[in-house]
Structures are given as C-alpha cells and as structure tokens.
Amino acid sequence: MANCERNKRLLLELVKQPDNSRCADCGATDPEWASYKLGVFVCLNCSGVHRSLSSQVKSIKLDFWEDKLIEFMKSKGNASARAVYEKAVPVYYYRPKPNDSVVLREQWIRAKYERMEFTGETKYPPVAYTTGFYEGMLWKKGKENTQFLKRKFVLSDREFTLTYYNKEDESKGPKAVIAIKDLNATFQPEKIGHPYSLQITYQEEDHTRNLYVYHESAEEIVTWYNAIRAARYAYLKTAYPTGSDEELIPMITRNYLKEGYMEKTGPLQKEPFKKRWFILDSQNRKLLYFKGQLDAEELGAIFIGTESNGYSVRECVPKNARGNKWTCGVMLVTPERQFVFMCEQEREQKEWLGALKQILFRPMAPQDYTTEAKVKYKR
View: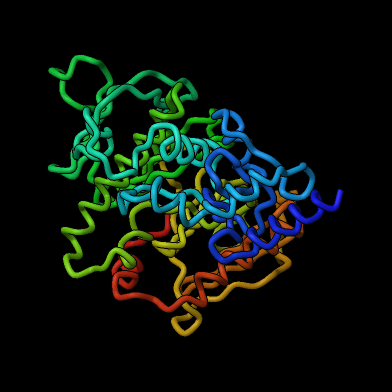
C-alpha cells in the first residue's frame, strides 16, 4: 500500500512538470491519464483514442502503477515523445485543440504514433497533403436541396485553386474553380450531420458561398483539410512574402467565433421578425446571415468595426415585436443603421454579446478598411 501511494505521488509530481502539465496531443490542461507504451501524459478524450490504438493507458490517480512503469514514465515524458513523433510536423498541419472535432484529434494521434508521419524520415509515396496537388471524390450537398452527390475535387498549389466537377468526366469542364485566396475550411460534423464533414467557404463576386462536403473515411477528410491548409499557406507566403509563420499560420483556416439562430427584423424595426442562421467570422470582422444553417449563399453581411468608428453592441428590448417569438434582444449599431436581433435564451444573448464585443474591442488592421468598404448589406 505504501508503495502504491509513493508511485502515485511520483506520477503526480511528473505530471506537474511544465512539459507534462498539458495533454501531449491536444494541449488540454491537467491531464489525468498516461500511455505507458509511449510514455506520454494525456487527457481523458485523447486517452480513448490511444486505447483504440492498443496503446496501454492508465489513470494517474485511480489505477495501480508498478515500479517499472514509473521508471519508464520518468525516462520519457511529453517532451521526449514530441522530439521523436513531432520532429517534422509541417507548419501548416493543423494541431488540434481541446474543443476541436473528434476526427481531428483522432487523426492527429494516428498520424503521429501509428503512421509515423512526422518523424522526419522520407516517405514513399509521399504523404498526400505534402505534394502540392490532390484529387479525389467527396460527397457534396446540392445547392438547392439536401441531397449529397459524389463529386470530383482537384486541389492545386501551383494554380492556387480548388476545382470541382459535377461528373467524373472532366472533358465537360468544371462546375466551379475556386480561388484559394479567400477560401476557408472548417469541420462541421453536428451541423452537416456526418462525423467526417467540412464546410468550405469562399467569396464569389460580392457574396459568400458555402460548400458542404464529407467523406466516408476519417483519414481522407483530414488529408483534404490539411491539403487545403498547405495550399492556403503556399498562397499566403506568396501574398505576404515578409510575413512570419507566427503571423501567417492563424490566417490559413479558422473556426468561426460563433454560429446559431437569431430572429432578425428590417431597417425600420417595424418589419416582422424572421428566423435566420448567423455566422460570426472574427478574422474578416463579418456577421453573415442565411435563411438556414446549410444554405449555399448568404442573405447579407454586416461589417463589425470598432467603437471609435461608430460601432457598438448592447442588450435591447425591441419597440415593435411583430412576429418575433424570442425575447432576449441584441442591438448592433453601425454608422449606417441599427440592427435588432432576438435570441431564444439569455445564455445565447450573452454569448452573442460577448463574441461581438470581442471583435469590437480589437483594433482594425489596414485590410479591414478594405473589407468594410466592400461589404454591402442585403435586406
């Protein structure tokens, strides 16, 4: 019993060390599990993935640890494992965070410890997302309906384009050629209804366009995601030749700050409220709204500036509530007009207020003024 308590105390001391105090795979704080095959400390969620790889895992606090396993953990640790399994991670490869999609976490762990993609050894054939060109079939949602159909996609670093075809026969030409310049990709399993799915967003003339795609293979959809990130990184290095990786990496792809339904009225605030799906894009300082959450095109966009430039947000109670069913109001003020939105619950209201203020309090960059000039409000 004394030996058991001693070993538990030693483990707890090890996990408090700076390199071990965060999950080796997603960075979550205070990991309570460890792989005694790899010698790494991991969080509960990542421990489940390790267990599926037949990597022996134990609870730091609840399980019994033999002396030899304690010595093994002392000789390894997260920093030691990282030096081997993350020796050559491409700068554009997405490293999952604690709240990211399950598929990102799983494939990151498999890429590191199972497929050994980042050890620095030459791979043949090369890993797909490193080649500058990628093609394959994805299930794509129709623009006007909910049906998903197989479509061929081709990604080119050289052309900085993502192209897709309605038929496998490419001789009939592409359905769309999408510039990498304004493209974003984000995992949306709950929204799309498939665990291995992406929302691809890009600019088409003066409006935002969404594609919703998925693949049956977890590895394949994450390969597509990192191939897109590789192409975006290559574009950014060309567009911003003096930019550092620290500056460029956050620009490659991003998750949206907040999404959800709110009710919206018109410019006179007398029009009936209508339920709309909103997406808050922090990077572009835009609040986009759609009729439904899987719509291909936006109904409108609102630029979010700073308070010094005439923008503000606050709670509100609408003067005219014709047609609205929700009671928790948000007023967004721009130099041109006031926008009134209604949230179903107070919690949602506070989340929207907090997210909008996060952008309002961030100084505008030079490119933000260009975006502000381009955004046109659509009723």
